[in-house]
Length: 319
Image (tube, rainbow, N blue to C red):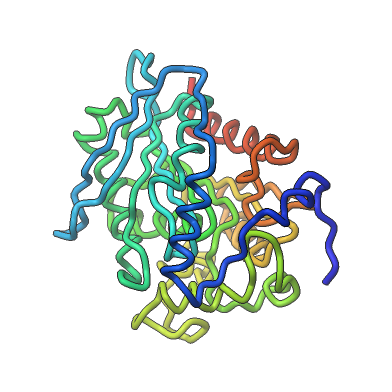
């Protein structure tokens, strides 16, 4: 299928390395090199950045985390759990560092990044359990010690992290634990069936290729279920939820990109949330590829970043 990219994104596309998830170690090394070349965000306000150890869920290993908080705060501020993308197999604290600093600076919230466990070494539900452990930590005494208002915690996830964020609000509700007050789903990976129009008709696009999606789901699900089969849990692939499963979930902000194989699963999930009565705001960016705001200095990327910072401020009631 032919597509038209935003001119600035089209100019940047040839410089974006291609991913091949058949080689996970190679892709992890490539990602580290790519991240190492990115300039660090320079915050306009002073930030307190601190590494922390978050107790794992039900005896699981501790999780490495990092808190980015405005140093000039005079009282508790909202907290935002930030879940990186990376197809469930790549990423970590370093991959969210720049955007975490930006969000803490511009939205005035305490951002918590986590090194959730990665597949295929740690398949479902390891990453989801780590995310839930992070919410418990943020809402508890440890979070309060870092100035986090436990009643105003949101979760932001990108790509696979967006799928984890969508699953997190479901599992937090059903486990009776603290439920995030808002969910920010940026190009969320939520559907293992891979049968949407965009997945079938956008095979080769910058930053994400549809050919990698089967690998991603196979690694993530492990022995739990066969991707596309009847036994995939809703907590692993939230697009499988019935409307009744979504009723009462916290407000959602969903971003999708026109030139992106994952486009339609994000839009379809937003539609389900809307039909379930969940207050949902949807942004679809024409001429943009998967997570295009990662490309620094483009006008469209700046608009994307401004939109989600604004949403974080509004939905977490930031003064």
